[in-house]
Image 1 (tube, one colour):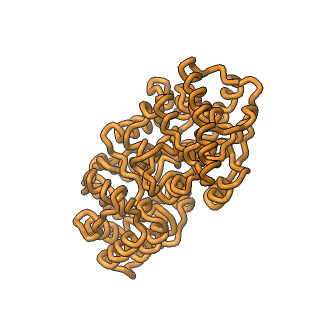
Image 2: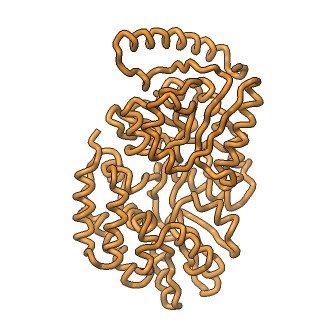
Image 3: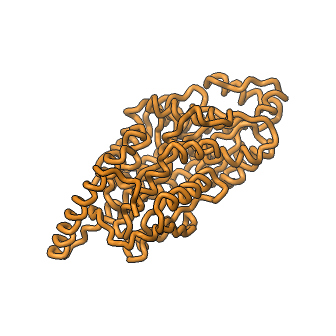
Length: 440
């Protein structure tokens, strides 16, 4: 029972229902798959099967649990059947499950060309463009956040139809242990020059200033952020969206040489070559390093577990930083209750759920800033809003090409151990990028 829809929307649904009959007949006659554009569903409208992989105590998990309660209250007689899945489960089996009759009605899925883009290309996701415009979700998302929602026929993000909707954002930032800065009488940096001064001062005091993880994403995130300190939007778009990157340009060369220099000077411990992201985060919590540069996904955990005074901010001096809209709500083409799925997304975009997300340490995309009470959370959201307002989200370095993440990890490890020079490192990145990048 859908009591919350407007008369205008109800009319639209009827038109769509008639259109869906036509589409179904056309598909049957043509004996072809029309799943990606079919906006019907054909379910019992009594159950909404929902999959996501957020921990119950995370900001997203808490907010979505509240959204489930509100959904059921607004849809008498309808139950949400939440099925908890791991990230790996969904990542590895999505194509197979979404192609079967066991597909959920709505699920969380990773954004990017190799994930949501691939499924959209395969016709496994519903084109939600009309619903997005009708419900006004496109008005709530900044252009840089919306980039990962839209995919071309070739599965390349940034343009084309809407196949997903993010209701939170994420970005990389510097986390500072304020107690260690005070202990060594070092100023928390707000500019790049102040950052390099702080790194040198900590090292003089026998402290490795930057937490790092060579076995996972942290190390190459430092490299990408260093390149971004010299880059502009056209450079980012060329690299991320157009398949055009010159790894021997001035920006990449500066980044590789500076990162190698930081390892050589001991600002980054070369013994972290095999360290995981978890180990890096724990080392910062154990106060072994005063700075860690990583994602907003750490924010809630640091709030819970840090036993010292800390702060966070955008990488000093940067106007561009890695980040994007969060993972997407997608509606599988074989979803049996698409209207219910759209209603659920609508609730997650409401002020109530967005504000809750913000107060739990998440990064909402449509919250009321005055409703966020915790000062650290308010600062986090303000930083994200400033980045989106200034078109400062630069996505992630591994997105342009399938399998590029593994190349970035392994080649950056070689840069850390000096088994590859900056020039050779960039040679390897160029070869892998050119081989795997999408031109669509």
